[in-house]
Length: 338
Image 1 (spheres, one colour):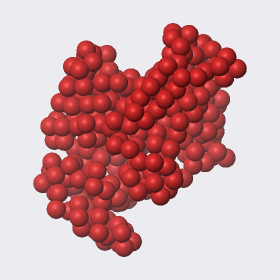
Image 2 (cartoon, rainbow, N blue to C red):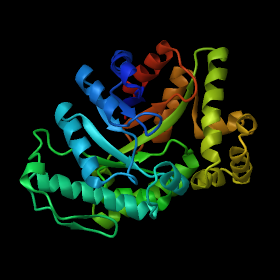
Image 3 (tube, rainbow, N blue to C red):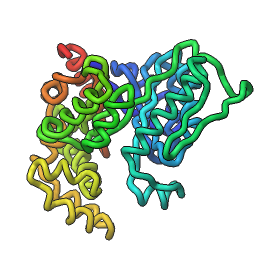
């Protein structure tokens, strides 16, 4: 199983951190849309390592598909074919109040954005003139002086992040792969995610063998009790944050924890972060995250994703795992049959 780890988004740190991830044995590095730009650190990593690279995810709402296409195309060329463009959505309040952009129905909008980016790529590759006309995007002009021409490594794959059945089904219909959201459980994956993937693939005439699925996990890994407690606490903090967001309630509902959501949501609005963390039990961390020694975590990742994914993105939220523990986790996953 291939393993991708999160790259530090700070540009002064990105080159050194990318080399550290490669030395640990990571197959790839990903960035997320947080306190730093999502594309620039990958440019640094592309020039200093041979890691596979992806945005996980770039928020599509505030960006033009043409802007996304240019960034992705340039990274694909500079990395010599090692880049994948992962796109995702944000909740309405962030799109409108943080980005100052217009919010649209997320699955329809993101699915159309993927198709628009693919249309731009097709025009640059010389496959067809640019003539994309959708509900949210219209692209009909690409003069030669704005056209970079065919990419020597081909256009990069466009992935979608998805959690709910509509977004997941849309990804399977239009994207080149799915980034399974890390706030998840085995029951939610089995009951909602996989059926939605199969329905989307049926609609576009593809099979799972033709559609990469990338698992994602919040990992609490430790070699002893002290390391493990710090790791569990870090993952619990992120679970509390996700659980306060309405879009993530279905995962809690699937496990019978739905009544926790309104409490977390209310506390998040008053800054009650310590109280939010206190509501997350070790059982919740174990079902939503992945907990244990490096060997235990590798076994759980294989059990959770091995039947349908041969790649995983590992997060270590709000704590710093020991490098030896991460290296052991990666080595064990590399030996797994997936």
